[in-house]
Length: 109
Image (cartoon, rainbow, N blue to C red):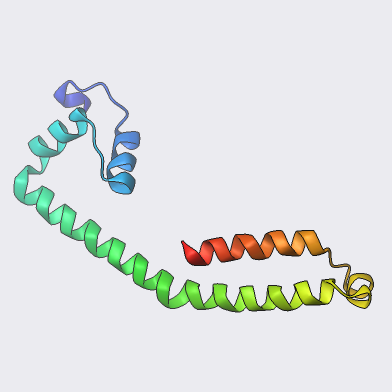
């Protein structure tokens, strides 16, 4: 981008483009002059395909694991409510509840 007289951090601009879909005027000028309209459309399709693949992996692999983890944490929370569970396993009710809450937030996101 410096070759085009653009004073901008390319890494930050590219990260912003890929993660948020936003771009600076400098990045737009650079991409238009380097890739052209056809190249930008091809790159957009590739990014869209990558996002769909990541989404499918998260739904197919991560979500079932989070469900199992939430179930097991629920069992541990039940055990932490009994005096025997607290003394035998060293479980803390509040810590277990907070961890379960965080897992459920991940699952619902």
